[in-house]
Image (tube, one colour):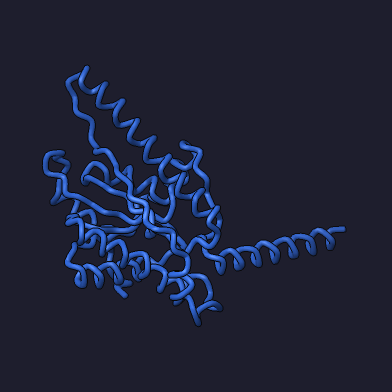
Length: 242
């Protein structure tokens, strides 16, 4: 699964080849799982690409939760674009062009039934196992298909910024689907170079809603069990102290 590959170095090489010439910026269609994870990725890549975020997450079990996360994604992008507009206005006054491009967003259909279909028989898999891999492919497949149909130069996902996600597997799937759909995959391991920490800082800056589970009912239940076990241990330790 490419465990020995350094995807960050591969990305660095691509960005070096692209350069930051605004007139030559390629297009990127990037799947986003949520606003917090996308925050650093968008800050990082918008100097090099004309980005469209694809918010497609049928794994989110509760519609209210899905809508809340989708709204946060749109709010973040609106804030980032507003900041860029202000920088452009200031740059004109100083005869300087700020780096970066406006970011677009496409919201996919909310279709949780598709997630439950691919999760059949995998309900008891631990977080980070085969059920998650099937979920990765579900979301990346739709992203690749849309990117190819709209003739984007590259497609990618923000998922690799999370320490809880398997970057090697995500890149393996991304490359496989790139060949299948005829669109270039942008390799990544966005948690590198302090990416995950920066996403936390940006989440605080924009007061983003940060969830503590990926979105599916199975991860939510696993998170609940972990919290209950932690509370039980803490209660036992407190009782022992008297």
